[in-house]
Length: 189
Image (cartoon, rainbow, N blue to C red; front, side):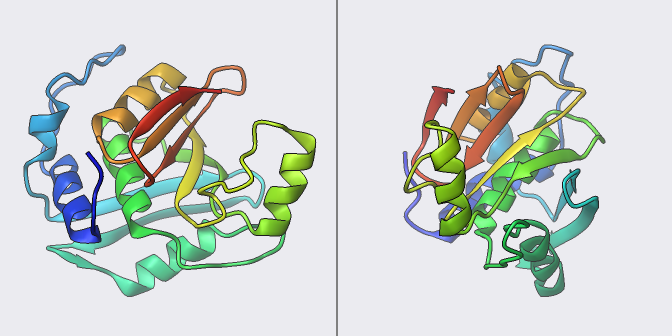
């Protein structure tokens, strides 16, 4: 099922911020669809970028409203650090990342490997790695590659897939998960 507008996406993800069931060390998200239907009042994102030494831990949504200064901070954090280029990062992907993080019940912030990529950066990465898509959702500000020390790639991918809201790629060899707000699909890299 694809989302036709941002309101639909937000409604489906709101539940990830309402209340969390206990998740074991090897979580199973069989009840995630029901969990995601609940309404939530607060959304938070917590990440770090080891390449820039920056961290972000911000509440970006309260009671149905995005907080503009927080979104501006997120846009800067998710920027193409190689080109120092900032765009309006897609809010739907912020919601997916935050919901997946909440489902895993961890206080460890995501480590961001890649958020927005300028076309120049994407072309450079593509010339060195055939796994980089020429029309990547990273170029559109709709994707992020993340990792957690406290969770496996399989656990992160399960949480991302439980959101039923975009693409989730598992990269076991490089120890990260790709999450985007494009069409719902999964793959292994």
